[in-house]
Amino acid sequence: MAELPLRGVRVIDLGWLTAGAATSTLLLDMGATVIKVEGPGAIDPFRNWEGADATREWWNESPWFNFTNRGKASLCLDLKDPRGRDTLLRLLEGADVLVENYRRGVLDGFGLGAAFLRARFPRLVIASISSQGETGPERDMVSFGSTLEATGGLAALTGPKHGAPVITGRDVNYPDQVVCLFATGAVVAALMERDRTGQGAHLDLSQRELTSFLMGEELIAVAEGTPSPRHGFGPDGEHLRDNTAHWPGGSAPVRDGAALSESPEFQNGTAVLRAPDGSAAKGIPFRFATRELAVRDACHRLGADNRAVLLDAGFPPADITALQEAGVLADRPRKGPPR
Amino acid sequence: MKPLAGRRILDLSARCAQRPHALATAMAGRICAMYGATVVRPDGPMAFEGPLARFLDAGKQRDGDGFDAALGDSASLTEAPITVRFSVFGPGEDPPMSEFGLLALSGLLDIVGEADDPPSPLAGHQPAYAAGLAGSTALLAALHAGGRETIDISLFDVTCWLNWKVAAGVLVMGRAPKRGGTRADWFTLPAADGHIALVYQEKDWPPLREMVGTTDPRFETRAGRLTHRVDFEAAIRPWFAARTREDITREAQSRRIPIGPVRFPAELLHDAQHTARGFIAPDGTPRPPMLIDGIRPHG
Image 1 (spheres, rainbow over the protein chains, first blue to last red):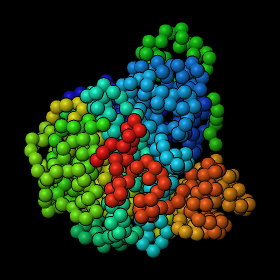
Image 2: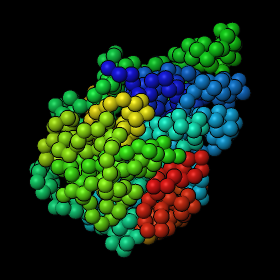
Image 3: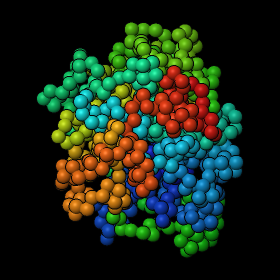
Image 4: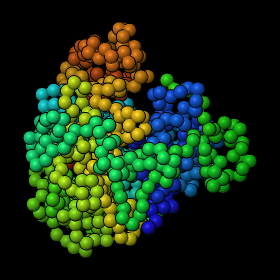
């Protein structure tokens, strides 16, 4: 087997939830080393999960967090503390990629804005994934994935022909999923460009734009004066009968999660894989014939790699201990339990 | 940024045996063109027409040879150093399939919509386009690494991957989310001039309650609002129905509630955010959905 395509690429992951964190996971799956950085006062919101037991280490037990972030080194570092910020800057000296999807303005507030980082680390590829993009009059509009389905044009054409428009809701949040596929490619493209020019890049990835882009033919159709109506099941006679989807030329059962998990295609597929410890892990949506993509490691506990990551970056052991004693490095959130 | 400048990619979308494969291939080719590749798309029986062709075939040529990579399905692919092969379930597993069928099989149809209504397929070509994005990302990685490679993209795997909470629900949580289930408290509501998307988290409930002016104690918890969904919706509907989408959005956003207007593609052509960022060309063609160091790439 050949080496993985991104072997040697080092990623600092300030990505939260799915849009940021799962982008870093795809980079990891293609061979990158990923260090996930969270703060003791700012853990990934995915760690704060419904059903958490406040008497236990709930932050290490979130099923969806662990599913998404398997295989990453975990560094728990307080970026609000100047010593934490300085530590991150040291780590960025050896990094190729920074992935972040904080609310716009938060990184600037830490003194870690993209313009500053581009000037200081000219070879760094910075992937900023945001709802609206870095600029524009609605840059600060608060949105989740399903809000972007509405503002991006997907919801208007989704739903019953004579009913209300439909959003995918909490269990899908479609724009958060699809952006990972695009953003990961954009990072690889920027790394290729860096190989040519020596220059990194700041990638300003707007989820709202991607949602609209994926309706591109509809934008062109309305500009030509031929807008599509909301089709319901589809424009070509698609329909449902007896819990089966029918279309001209074929049919397929409408599966729920239980039926899906029992189906051989799913069990033989790559959408959900297993970590070496047997836990279910986010899968990999492509296969390479000469390079084996696999989930190679389970999820690390919060802060489990603090010392190893900093030793690797050249910090003297005494300095690491001082950061731990000052609470700049931590292995648990300051606040909790979850709501 | 033109990292693929000088690379030649063969896009066999018009020669694929099935439409989802053709759409995925064409999207992957579109992304390669965006990154500066010379993309050659020979004609064939599956060629797109109208707005679909103008969107997917933008920036592609008809003729050429000497390719670094080829995109297509098992029926269309020819020899190239790197191939990206789209299939339904995996190499050579290509039963007759539509995007509607992919949504049904992956659970992404069943999860979307209101509990009492039939499920709703996502508009447009989401399963195929997502597979195209997966294919272009994998191709970029293979080109970056160098050497020969065969990349397989299963349309079914990609659709399940997008729908991971349902796909992994039984394995991770013991049960999968269901349409209209215990988390289904985001939905659209009529406004005076269209619809808005009611999207919020538990922390947003106090400001949302204050905004719409409801005091009913049954709605104080999420469980209560779900249990009394019909009454809850009836209680808040008048507030939204009396206001325009713009007024509702302004009120909600001033309280940091992630509510937004349902906008139609026709409205997006003049959307303030898209316009300010130069996202849509005058003929309606969306430009690449990102800025690089503040500049939008061509293509």
